[in-house]
Length: 232
Image (cartoon, rainbow, N blue to C red):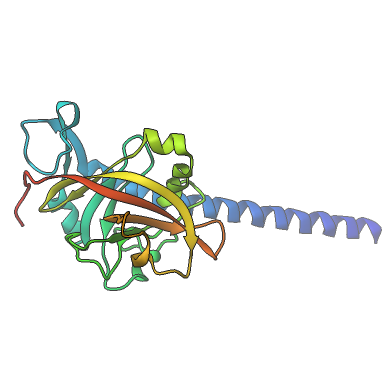
């Protein structure tokens, strides 16, 4: 009987181990699936010579960053921009839904996934013409989406990565300077953030270390280029 009991214990342990391994692989592949989608989408963003005026450009180092919005719109008509902070993990298409819930659980290609998408607040105008515009993204444990925003809590990192480019389908590229990064109450109104002396034109928001906080980056618009782009 004792021998049988030992065999049963070993069998149960093996079953638990097998479950944990399968669950671990399942979680890994789930995260990887989301990461792969956005890696594939980055093939629609290319560096070209400065005399190529196909689409949006930042004009740095004699090169243009060209975003193929026409092709991206065929994949998802909800695209409103592409956001990029050079030399960081922030390099994503920005969409806008009819509410602020759908893209919490759906990717750019509208696949149901925990990573969701990077999206503009549904109350903002799609052309970013409001005084304050808010872009949301998940704080993913695998480092994707807006997880990288927490790096800006480090003053040295912020100083070295303070330029943000926002590429728009019909407005060229807008340049922002990141001026501040801090935690704010999760239940506060993001549209009221800032003061009269410091009015950001772009806010990047993600969940914080717990449910009571969120991490927000304040960005000020510096320059606009509209060399545009494509029709349709």
